[in-house]
Amino acid sequence: MGLCKLPGLKAKLLVVPQAMAIFVTVLLSIVLLTKGLEAIGLTFMSEPIDGEVERWGDLQGNLPMYLILIALSWVSAGFGEEMFFRGFLITRLQTAFNSIKFSSAISVLLAALLFGYVHYYYQGVAGLVNAGVIGVIFGMYFLLYKRNLWPLVVAHGCINSLGFTSEFMGWGL
Image (cartoon, rainbow, N blue to C red; front, side):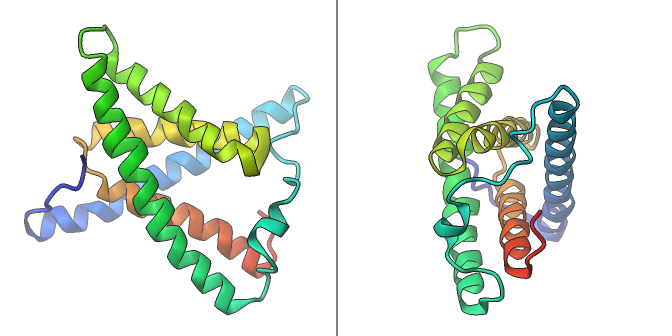
């Protein structure tokens, strides 16, 4: 399900540039999507999310809360979500749709849609779209990297860490 053994130092070190490729692809895609939607008059992607501050508590300047959320995020989202949505779900959907043309694309899209929906309840439509796009990107990289989840886990952890760091520092990204 994606927890590949990484034989040798080269394979282990390759995880970092692979994760960075995912990270940069996600950031560029979200910025382009947000700016593109704004250009046609849709601003929901750049508006503050109702209830977001209450969900994470008073994170700005709160180092113990920040460190707890970073740790939880790496374990539950970075590792847990990647194991389920990419490692398990895409793999199972590909098996289920094996006889259908474009089974990999369908599997990635369905897993991304569910990934987006899971984020909808606390991030609204913007979260659905953001996470859905991220889910497609992560799914494509999962297949591109021959079902190796490690770069996705690292990229996911870094993306979430960027969000929490932004809140902690008061940058409001």
